[in-house]
Amino acid sequence: MFNRITTGFLLSILSGLLFFIGWPTNGLFPLLFIGLTPLLFAFHYLSNSDIKRKGIMWFSFLFIAHASWIGLSSRWFYDSSPKSYFVGVLFESIAYSALLCPMLFINKRLGRKWSLIYFLAGHMTIELVNQYWVLSTPFFSLGSGLGMFPKIIQSYEIIGIEGGSFFILTANLGCYLALEKILSKQKPGNSLALISLGISPFVLSIFMSFNPDNKKTTIAALHTFQDTYNHRTHFNPEEIVNKLCEKSKLNSFSKTELLAWPETIISNVGWMNNLSGENSYKSMLLKLKNTNELSVCFGGFGFSLDPEGQNNPYSRLEKARNFYYRTHNVAVTINKDGLYSLRGKEIFVPFQERIPFLETLPVMEEFADVVGTNTMVSSYENSRTVHKTMLGKKFVPVLCYESIFPLKMAEFASESDFLVVLANEFWNKNLNGSEQYLCSNVAMAIQSRTAILRSSNSGISAIIDQDGKVLVRKKGRNAGIIQASISKKQDFTFYELIAGVFYKISLIVYLGLLVIAIFRSAIKTKST
Image (cartoon, rainbow, N blue to C red; front, side, top):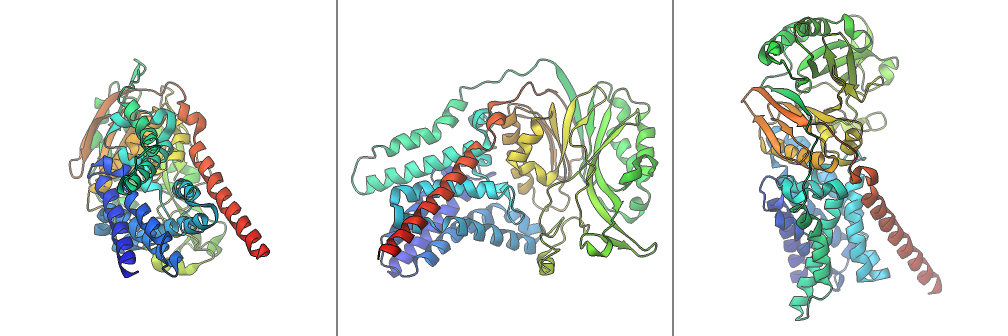
């Protein structure tokens, strides 16, 4: 029994290591197609043993496999915030293990075949949950793990990142079944068909091509390396605006339609209900007067009065004037005509930008760790999702963390000619995390055939075309302007028409098998 338990733990660790080595930026992506095989063998040994408390053991195997994978892959985060790193790995791995733990019950009541189907559906359900549950993240959606190699994921315009995850999981099941038969000296048989199905979209991608519109739009981004909060410039925001305009050399953009600056690069945009009266707006407008048809999209912190006052744990008290206010992480687009649009961030980094469930569970504040800023932000109700350039090109300014949510990015892309990602990664001490963000954005660009302009403070700024090719980039301390011409989005991709279908079907299968197993168990108990 001891040997079986030890073997199970070792196989779980091996599974996590395979996923880690296959994950960006290590780049050995074929390992993603076999990474679950050791974990499934651990399940096989456990389910066929006489070990007591199998449920606890299976939960432990799942936890170790997942924690090993995401813990090693996100070790860059530990360099910046050890506390948030451990909290994130813990919550994410507990959720993963809890959702897949009933596999033992399914195996007992419905048989091995249905338990493997449940395993696949459970993985997809976890990816779906991670896009909506605030204590987890979709950063580790399997389909986005191939973003380093855009040539093999061109099929994402049909199946999307979620489809990529589904087919990678299918290949994993096929590899497990094939290896199991080979070890028992049988022919692989139908398991080879599963492997072929799993890798088919990625093989077909090699032969796919995309013909963009010949009409080009020139866009640019300023890559910076600076602390976004300074006491002097916070209370004199026009100084930072002037400095950024000088770095951008606005008058040199004769044919550029949009210039992007990073997220929260201006720490005090002003009051949201009267932006046109704020110094940041006036200074920006003055600098734009001598440009041609340039629009500038930039990120900053804005403020609004909070009518809930002290009843809202996310509000802050201005002691000198005795009122409560809220802080918003916003994107502002402005042109020389004085027209502007505002969009507030909708999805916040848990325990850094916003502490989850603070209204009902004040104890959650104990898990918080300050990264980048000590400002706790709130949603801004009067947001305008779609912004426009002076020449009428439509885009959605996506604020940093939002850009790793596949379903949300597909929704944004369906309304845009191209996407703009504003990021602040000054707090990040290891650029490996920024590289992973970029790989994820590459996959997003392909699934919607939408070019992405990315402006980052200290991370990676880049322009990605509709094929997922990174046209130009700057990173780290290498501040400056990047510029390229891109084609605007032509039409909806097939994936955008079916977005979420793989997740929805998987959720139905996951819940359906669980209900059937419970029903059978109840009938058997009643009969007994």
